[in-house]
Amino acid sequence: CSAAFTVDPTTATGGQEQVAMILEVRDTVLKTSKADIKSVYNALIQGIRSAITQEHSLGIVEIVLLKPKTVPKTTSGKIARAWCRKAYLAKTLDVVYRKSFGGDEGGSSSKNGTAKKPGPLEIESSRARPTSNKLSPDDVQRLRAMSKKDIMAKLKKDVAQMGSISSSTIAEDVALSTILDSITLSQFHGLLESSYAVKLSDEYLFRENTTLNKLVEVVKLGYAPDDGEGGGGALAQPSSQGGIAGALGCPPGVRCVIM
Image (cartoon, rainbow, N blue to C red; front, side, top):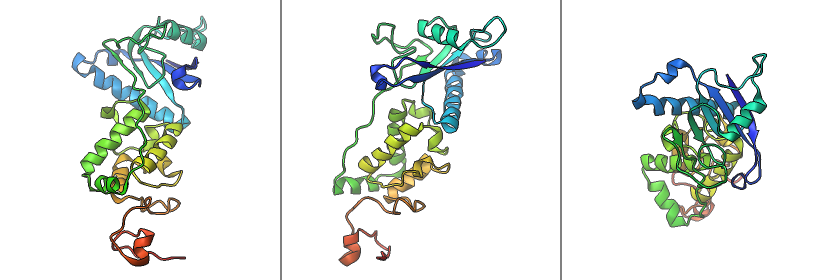
């Protein structure tokens, strides 16, 4: 059984309502060894969040796993969403594991708003956002010269910060749209343009085949070859070619044609 409901807006969420979700876990999941319990629950929660993001583009502030048969229900056996929300806010649910993705609700803060350390099976939410800095031509060259491994690590760090998730749970070969909700994707689009000197079309990050593995190649090249609307080119960069080709910023070995 599961239930989703809105929680009150806070200063941290910009005054916007957020959605929390509670779910019961099966007895078989509860029998997981202590050594594997965090990885199992993290994978489960990430899968749930990815599915919700992909289907509904809905941001979830927290997912809470409960013991079996503990989701509040009416006398007729229906899930009582209002009671679920009340128990969630009052912190009276029989919690097995919880993970926050930003905002002040849930396990990362107390009722009076004073921060507290997460419990043994709670993960503190990360609200930091990567800063957007305009790169100089020298910065761009250094970025393009980075190894693919280092670019991947940098991308993962920024995605983790923007999505308020652990970088260890981010898969490199899945659609980015299943990791970040639509609002965060749009913000990440701006970060790619300002901090990675890569210009992409508005819809590029929402494609099912746009993964972190692909973005590593895009950052390395400075543009996305398969992005027609993005112009197929990076933001203005120094070019080693002279004449008109150099003035247009055409990469070496590429023939630019003025239509």
